[in-house]
Image (cartoon, rainbow, N blue to C red; front, side, top):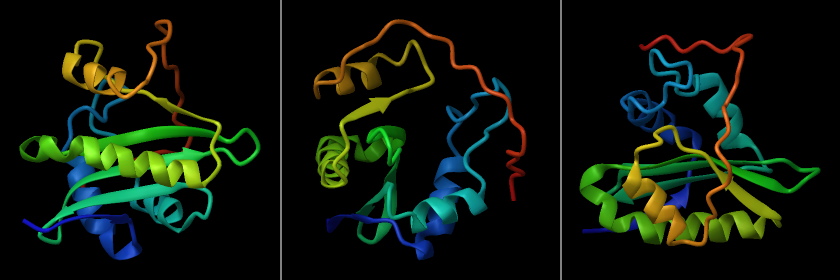
Length: 151
């Protein structure tokens, strides 16, 4: 098994999009999957400020992480951290590499949000990696131009 952790490139767009739109957890509006539109992913993959990583096994993308870093505050928001179920044993190595790449961008701290309150495994995984559980908050949002037709 050949394992690689690399920066995402534009050629990865379709694979990342397919993997992302196949995950039911990306439904912040409580309805349909609203994974990032391809145009947004393209801008993100080309950004010098942000960190986008791919986990590959035998050249197939089996995981990805998308981290937006606000240049003025140096706050890193790990928006998406995805590893296919059958490759969860690689999640620790993938997170370690993602964090190293974020540190190279001189980020001051990393925030990570996940959708499911009852996702004990995800919470325990991040707790064991030094992430602290904050107070319960509501995530409020308003879509003003964000649409994601499945195609």
